[in-house]
Length: 384
Image (cartoon, rainbow, N blue to C red; front, top):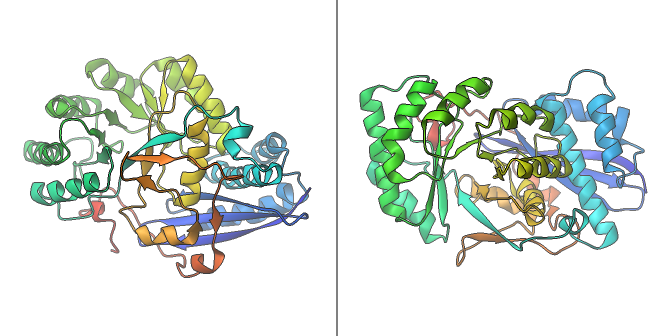
């Protein structure tokens, strides 16, 4: 079996463009992959056009390791976010093809499942007025849909510092959310790399009474010494890693012992097997895996395949019940959160267990998607 080519399909919303890739073979089998780029979708599509000619066409979709190695190193230049995302969408599509050809789900090819059920947490749910009352109502809606966990960035446009008024208001928002979800639900606290170490530590202590499940990206991701400073001074689990695009770069993070939970994005770090390798390394450091997942239903399905066979998998992020939920229509077999358990049931269908509906995808054309975390009202994820 050989790859004959690929097609790319960009599904647009005002705040995110999702790039789907369908890999085609000479035996008629196809596979699908997905990633979400921020402001670099055209660059990704351009890279994939060149990579198709240079690496992809004519390759054996079963030889995943070889294809990833050639795409990563065969152009000599160091692979960054765009290249690793391009590798990821093609890689997960190859796993989809392999699973279909063998009649088994991808998790069966990665060692077999350790669970059929993966806990979900909601994101994208607070696209509303930024008040305690509105956040209370929105959080209650999340719980009513069966979720047992959610995440929120309550810090407005905070950057390095947050003044007393802003800090007090952020605390009032979290107080309202905790009241809405009750004492047992998990509440993840997102900082989006906003703050200096001292500000992050102060805010973590202010918010500790509401028992956050983790403190995510408290400082900008480039400086591990700054992250270590925060980790040394707070008693909350630290989560980070969505903006690391090569598993090799996690080596220093593990060595720093600054993170309790790592958050690679399967769609940015080279795909399913690269993330599985990283998860195995994390397990040797007694570190949990909670992947970043701001994509659509194909990326969710691919990450669930990984989750099913990964012993140190904690929980999976999910946007698509709240932020532009209509895009779930573009994927047949889209994973759903069980309202009785707050979990995904992992598919037992061959491959990834999903298919892209290219006709429906065409109804969501690429947009000039813009998501600026420093702009007033960013949390609404609405057109500017």
